[in-house]
Image (tube, rainbow, N blue to C red; front, side, top):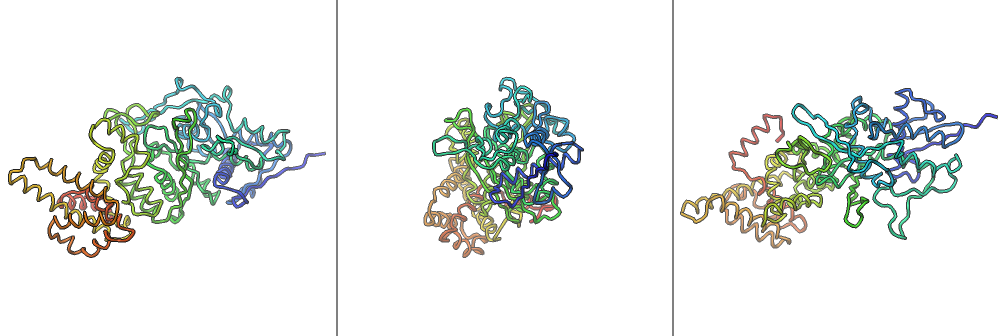
Length: 541
């Protein structure tokens, strides 16, 4: 008697389908679609034309369950030249043929889902492989990776299939999977448990890493991010995901918000409707001293961007792109990017992106570095004795003056145009104070103008940062405006300035706007030339 056909159906809307399960379903959909396009036979697993829809996947097979899914996983999880090759994602010809185009995904998977070398064995660090990627003429980077030999090491998801099919059939009992399925929260204490659920649901979790995006946080390369998209439409995701983050300069990000909004902006830029907003869960992982051989979750952020946040982030990434830096200019901060150059992440972009995700003003707390910035800042501090981390961070922001000016001049970046007028009023105040310092030098002061200016700026910065209450801030700003004399921009906006710095809960905006103005100050002539140049280059004012 012929064996009965067996089927299983997964839907995005099934009860208990979390974000990782939906990502896994998307990975399954993409893998099956690619097998169709490439005429790959996955029998005994098969599906009909109407089995792959925008919100569900149905697969069919005859015979042993394990045989059907082993062939699927062998196709979905491949190794080429020692590097992971995912047919559902790596569809471009250069991704198929050249390992260096897949290295960042490979490194990301091994730093997150399959981080422990006992979970996914790979080459030893001393045997790391180095490949050269040519960015353009005269620009190249070297990428390093730990190769996987499938014959010797095996592939973790394929090996784990035996847990799901103890007797060749789907397990009737709940399945317990180790922590790589939910990376960074592996059981460490008696009260913590591994993931437990149905074998059919475990299939999706074991495919989920394929469809996630992987990026590296600015710093020494110890912190990696995976972006788990919140998939709402399988067909749309299949058409867009393979063509996101193909450029090597898109790998480095400054914060979790930066990673989530970069994905959302890239997704929106490829859709017919720019109103589509791709939500995601962003997870940062890295090593800590008490877990030497294992990375742990350092932060988790759910990114649900508004249209305004995506639009503002597109302005942000145009003004603050990752920059290629020749290795002769300075040492790379990245342990697995070496050679002729590397991509640097501009200071401040991470804080601005996190503000956009949170729905705050893009300038909020701009002069307070994120935790991801501290390692780099500490190295700078040691190289400049006597300077505090806060002062070095402010100097780094000042080096981004031109980029920040682009955001200040962009009307879409502001919820209230008065906030920009506050910055302009503070510029006029600074201009008056600087002129007073110049006159002091003309009268025969003992210090050079540059020294007096540096001391004045540092006094203003420190006083603003120390203004931890509304009363302290109001007192300092009122005194500063009074010292500058009767400035037209201050007189014209006097009531608004006072209301902002005396606001019961929004008074911090006045502090942050004043610090932004201090970091970006230019003479009026330079600002006007910058505005003219930006307009001629197609900028929006």
